[in-house]
Length: 303
Ligand SMILES: [Fe+2]
Image 1 (tube, helix red, strand yellow):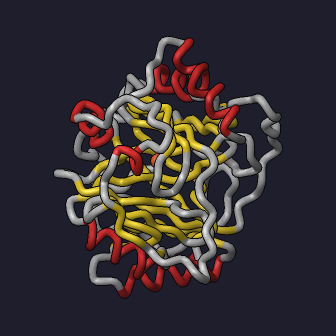
Image 2: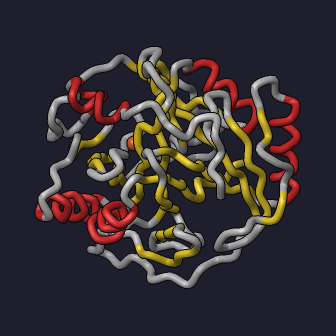
């Protein structure tokens, strides 16, 4: 039912510093502003991929998924309404933001606000040319959770996700189509955003994106490397002003859903980074990606 991740909305304590990071370092395009909200796009027709607004503390405002039709939005609302842990923020309604369309917002079992939408208008955009390292889309999102089985079941039941693979019992990859994962959950002492991954064109563009950040004085939190599970490349960087971690990635595995059997993988160096080029996945890396408890839980954003 879910076709892709449409956008992520973040509340940040210093909007101008966050803008500097996401526009000038991360290479998203500012596509609009309104009422203190800043909309940033990738090299795609999606109306925007990241929304920023000023907030007292860093918080995830929204994780927004796309579905194909208004009736799919209604079906999600119905499933949320029936689910014992589902909480609708409001009934499905016309969206009031760039791209318009029709959407429903609800809280997931950890209290994150999720939006599911359809019928958005497209945006004129500059396509990413070979050699350019600008992101083309959001690839996937990883979420820290205190109860990985509860989170997995909620996303299976309400949004139709399917398990693609596990790493031991603490990392669960979920998909809604042939892309190996759209979201993943990892066990953590608190619920928060682990990272948002942005797709770039290919491995060359991925290395250019990574190197561009390094030349600008930002070292990767972790990477560059290539994961075993999912087969995608990774370079994780932290927005210094908000603390959120973003990933450049490419070449995520495309699976045959007819024959795919989820596996439980052991945690090994080779599985973590096939290339062996990344820094070790040590406590400092894990702590950065765990972040602080999300200040946005159980409190839907005002907009
Ligand atoms: Fe990732």
